[in-house]
Each structure stands twice: as structure tokens, then as C-alpha cells.
Image 1 (cartoon, helix red, strand yellow):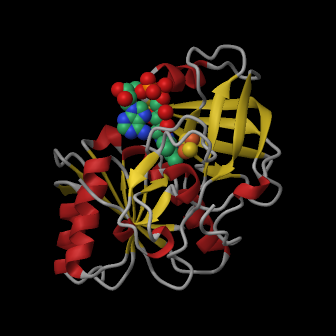
Image 2 (cartoon, helix red, strand yellow; image 1 turned 45 degrees about the vertical axis):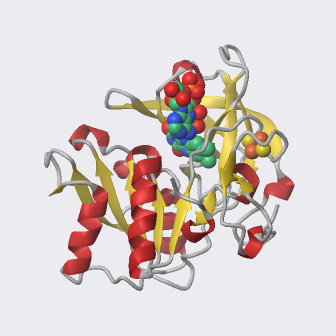
Length: 279
Ligand SMILES: Cc1cc2nc3c(=O)[nH]c(=O)nc-3n(C[C@H](O)[C@H](O)[C@H](O)COP(=O)(O)OP(=O)(O)OC[C@H]3O[C@@H](n4cnc5c(N)ncnc54)[C@H](O)[C@@H]3O)c2cc1C
Ligand code: FES
């Protein structure tokens, strides 16, 4: 663990537990919310867990998922927003109510650019997942609603908004086909809001979504001098720093001085965009 800040990471307290499936909610064609019975440990916004179903797990390794929500107070349940794309996510989606899911977490380093500032969050698809806990923590601290720019291919792709606490978010939506909100991609939406003065280039950007989107946002922010953090969804094997399967190239400065690679699972998943070497 490079950054041991206790405010954004508690990987040292990592543990594995079995949790019963409490409920499942289907959202559109490919997305769902899986709710597991607690108790869960303290989770910081941006952290993730490695999940596998106990009864039927068709692949060798567990799969990383962001904690989408955790019950405030006693953490009696946790939710995961899942895009079902392959055998692992399919197995989690098909676990019956009352079935057991193995959860190792919380893992990784979450967001640290939000406490003293008014961040602009840019999310694509299930890249929305790490922002709910952030919105919840800010609301609980009496801070203004979190600005989230949420983009997808079409209206059906914009899933998960309804799970956010009432009044915790100031939403701006975009769809590629114009079926909801701004017509265009979410970076174009951000540029449009900047040009209208509705967001400031001084506000840090927190970004999570498909790699090409994060790369484009990171480049744009670098060009205009806006601080930018990205939450990477690199494929992972172990999730806690052992296999090096999640290595990403870094610039070799700051906390990565002299290094050419960082491990997303322990050094991230949240990185300062300037720490990474983008394709
Ligand atoms: C820190 C972190 C947080 C994540 N949070 C979420 C979340 O909240 N919700 C969610 O739905 N997903 C999330 N993901 C992505 C999720 O882990 C993958 O979608 C999942 O592992 C796919 O497993 P599978 O067995 O269903 O599909 P696989 O068979 O493993 O993959 C299906 C296809 O997708 C490709 N693929 C798999 N994973 C990725 C990836 N990460 N990036 C690009 N392509 C990939 C594979 O190459 C393959 O072509 C997160 C990933 C990380 C690292
Ligand atoms: S997933 Fe194994 S080191 Fe990161």
C-alpha cells in the first residue's frame, strides 16, 4: 500500500466473509443491483470488493466490483451495481435469494479530492457505482449536492440513479442518441457546461467509466490544468497486491518515483490522472 491514509483506505483491515443474497433488482437488459446481507465493515467511497458466488462459480477467480452503497449506520446490507457481461457477473446475477456470496474487502484506495472542494464527477455506465457513497457522505456532512455528469449510449443505459439518496446529487445527463439529456458524450457535456459557466475548470474532476472515456477526460483536464482523479476498472486476479495482474504503466513520479508500473488493486483503483501513462 503506497498511500496509507486512513481517511480513504482501510485495506489493512481486509477480510473475507460469506454474505446471503438479500434481494436482486433488474435494471434494463444487462444491469442489476445485488443486495447482500451484512454486517459490512466501514467502506470509503471508491473502494471495491472481490466477489464470487459460493454455490456456483463458473470461473477460477473472483471478480472486482465497487461498493455501490452500504446501509448508513449499522452497515446491515451492501449493494453492488453490476453490468452482466460474462460468466462471473452472470453467476452473481443468477444467485438466488438466500444464496451465499463470498466478499473480500473493502480493498483499494478511494477518492481523496472531494472533502475540501466541489468536485465534478464524470461517470459512464456502471462507472456511476463509486459515486453513491461519496454523495451519501457529503450529504451526511451537510455539504452541497454532488455534481454528477452521467452519460450512456441511450436512456436505457442510464441506470442506478434512483438508488441515490434524495437531494444528494445535482445531475446532468447525456446520451449519445439524445434520448435523455444532452445529446453527445459525457465529455462533450462537460465542455458545454464549462463554456456556459455552469461548472468551473478549477473544480477537481473525479471520473469512472470505460477506458477510452477516462483517457479522453484525463487528457482534456491535463490540457486545461484541472485536477483529475480516475477510478480504473483494470481486470484483476487477486485484488490485494499479490499477482501483479492489474499492473498499469505510470510516469514514475511522486509516490511512484523510480517505478514503471503500479498495481490498480492496492495503489488504486483511484489514481491522480497525471500519475498514469495514457495510451
Ligand atoms: C476496481 C473495479 C471496480 C469495478 N466495479 C464494477 C462495478 O461496480 N460494476 C460492474 O459492473 N463492473 C465493475 N468492474 C468491472 C468488473 O470487474 C468486470 O466487468 C467483471 O470482472 C467481468 O467478469 P465476467 O466474468 O462477468 O466477465 P469476463 O468473462 O471476465 O469478461 C467478459 C468480457 O469483458 C472483458 N472485461 C472484463 N473485465 C473488464 C474490465 N475491467 N475492463 C474491460 N474489459 C473487461 C473481458 O476481456 C471479456 O471480453 C470493476 C472492476 C474493477 C477493477
Ligand atoms: S489483482 Fe493481483 S496484484 Fe492487483
